[in-house]
Image 1 (spheres, rainbow, N blue to C red):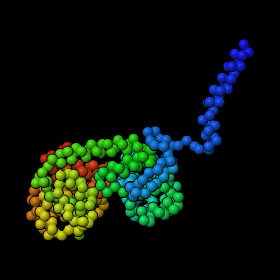
Image 2: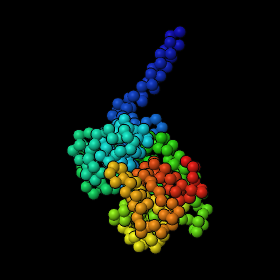
Image 3: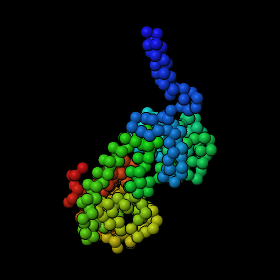
Image 4: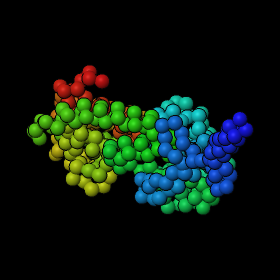
Length: 323
């Protein structure tokens, strides 16, 4: 009986020792377990941002600042509005973003306001890389740059933001849907012969007359939508173009970017009423359209909506009423 009791006691001691080992190891090393959000990656997390910079995100960010309207749109799409503690004065979509504290303009960031907000993570763009980003990092703040130059990189930017905020699953859902919608357009336009692609001019502004060159995302959208950008041989991003050059190119479709505030419809009104454009095919066949310029110029989730609208304008026979 005594031997049996001793064996039982020894077994209990062994079990207690094994149970306590993980806690003991943690106390000995002094290391805390890595932060692992549901469906996300472990923190600290090391990534390379879209400026090619290696960035270490120490923990799941709870206070985030956006230094660009496109970054703000992505944050809201990912459901991170409750963690957003600062935006720019130009962050106007969704409407709720207007109510967030402002930390300056797009290129005129108020560093003091950023510091006062005590952010865990700041999302910047390439415009901030020379001055703003170094200043913020010099103050011990973590900055991730999103700088998508084409549609594929917009998708990458959304997935990257999802990774560093613990919203990887939500980001994958958003980008998966975007890719499906993009494919629904390009599957139809890819089969078009060159002679089936209308000549298109995208008017950014009318005075001076400005359009989009080959190195822009808007040019890429026009191409994906099955059009030919009449300014595709111009090397500048947003070049001025002469009225003579436009008339000679004889665009079959004119698309004017619309903005917000006073003069928002000035480009489309110019396209519709300028006497010198009266003889181009776009005017003769009533193919002058206006698009919200945010859908084409902002590298966020709504860029797909911009593509779909351009496709409807350029090829109504293929896409009208498809959205």
